[in-house]
Length: 85
Image (cartoon, rainbow, N blue to C red; front, top):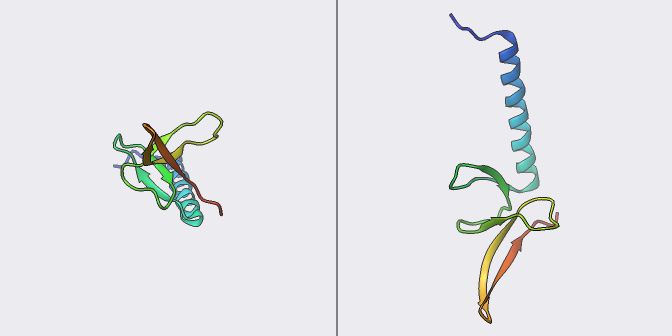
């Protein structure tokens, strides 16, 4: 016999609805779901590619995706991937 009670089903239903709502939000903003090499799930710009790097920058409310663009005078330069919708 199943040991799941009504409140467990309600909790699962709520989590499923929340997940579906989050996916709908991601699709609506043009962002993509991604998974890191450590198994963490996140939302990134649609133009993010493998080997882009995610950083927490001082003054930014959210982590940002940076792409190594080139070397200039022995210093690396990065591009910030952003959406201006």
